[in-house]
Length: 300
Image 1: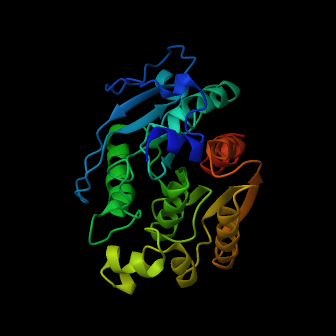
Image 2: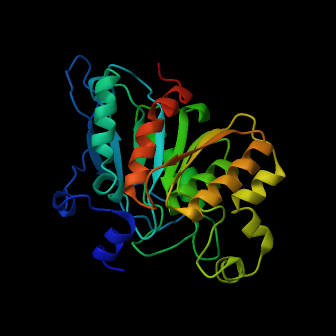
C-alpha cells in the first residue's frame, strides 16, 4: 500500500506540508527551571526492548512547556499507539499531535501530559497484533519496556493512575488490549475507531492459527473482550470514539462499551462526523484531552 492509498484511507496527510519529512532532534532536553517556554518539543529516541526483544523503530516524545521550564515535576503520561500500516510519525503528520498539544498547553499554562508515541508494529506493514505471539512480543514491549524507559529517563509520575493509553484504528484496538491485560500499568484509555479483537484479516481462525499456533489460551489473553469477561476493572475508565460514517468501528465500540460496563469500567462512547480517518481521530483526542488530563491528576 503506497502513500496515496494510505492517504485516501486515513486522510493521513491533510496538506502538502504534512508530506515533508521532519527531522526531529534526538537529544532529550533537561528541564530548565525559571525559563519561559511557549511551545513543547518533539524528540525522537530509541526505547530499548530489554525484556521483549521487540524490533522497534524510533519513538517520538512530546514534552510540554511545563516540563521544559521545570514548572511542574512528574507530569502524567499519555502513550499513543499508531495504526497499521503506520509509524509513530503518523500521529504528528496526519494527526497533527504537536499542534493539538501546544494549543491545549496554551489554555492550561503549559501543563499537559507528556506524550510518548512508541513504535507498536516494528515496520510499516507489520501486524504483531499488539500481543505476545509466536512471532514477537509486542505487548511486553509496550507494557513493560516502554514504561520502564520512560520512568527511568523522564521526570514523570510513576503510578498507574497517572498513565493513559490511546490509539487509532489498530492503535485503538491495542489500547483496549493493553488496558485490559495490564491494569497495573494503564487505567485510562482512549480508543479511536477500534476493533473489538486482534485480527490479521480473514477472521479469527486465521489469526488463531497463524499468530498463536492454535493456542486458544494465548489468544484469549490478547483479546480484550475475553479479558473483560474474566475479571472486573473498577479503577479503569475510558472513551470509545467512532466516526458516523464508520459502521464497523461504531459497532465494535458499542460491543466493547457494553462488555466494559459489565466489567465495572467507567466507559462512554463518542460519535463524531467522519469516517475511519484522522479527521475523527484528531478531533477525538482534542475533545477528550480535558477528561484525560483530569483523570491523570492535572487541574481542570
